[in-house]
Image (tube, rainbow, N blue to C red; front, side, top):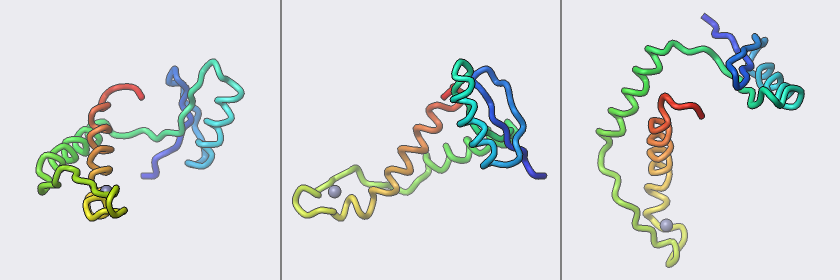
Length: 108
Ligand SMILES: [Zn+2]
């Protein structure tokens, strides 16, 4: 099943769009034309049960990650340091995932 794209305003009013690009364009245009209803977002409807399962799996992954050492940056001595090149990327991903789960269930 191809999921449909919508532009949705702050009140939850949805406008069916042709595709993702159309939904982004409609959302941007609506922000300008109807600022009282902004922000508008390009969205797809999602199965809440699948989303809950995915969040649970992400939580389990984060809780069972092999040890990532605490930051020990020495870029001030020889940039970029081993700690940043080896672990900087995964630390950012973990922080983004934790932030995502933190706002779980809350409006953005
Ligand atoms: Zn560093």
